[in-house]
Image 1: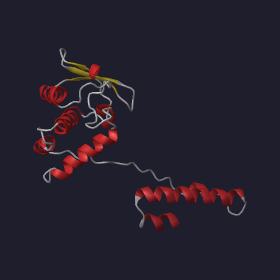
Image 2 (image 1 turned 60 degrees about the horizontal axis):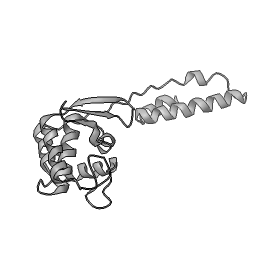
Image 3 (image 1 turned 90 degrees about the vertical axis):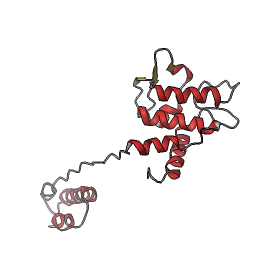
Image 4 (image 1 turned 180 degrees about the vertical axis):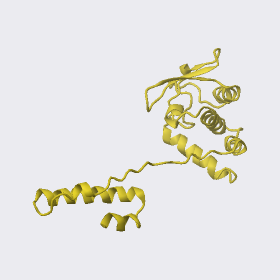
Length: 181
């Protein structure tokens, strides 16, 4: 009766927690010899979490990619990073970890070892992505650094960015483009 009563008031995820606690309580009563056979009466609640994937229209993605100022070094870097994310689907940690040696310009490919899964991934270097990265490397990336990350901090020390830096770059792009939100 308690499961039926609570089931009408709780969401499925919460109900799973309630059913588990109720089952533990019933086992306790059984172990103490106070009430036998109640635990099997509590139904198992299976909850499958379903997340919807938000996909932006192509025009909104382009607006986001175009939002950084292409006349500045930071704008060139951010454009290249956003375009790489939009076209390849790479995780922020993989983009931040991208090294100069990971790009095969002649073979038009990018090879990365994914940070999360340690899977080697070989992706095509699309023309627009390659052009944006090349523009950043030639006209925006700080020179004279010993760091071989593709994307570097604009201010000293010129070291590779972190995944959270890319998160902030993407958040700023979303904030500056009302049509993408």
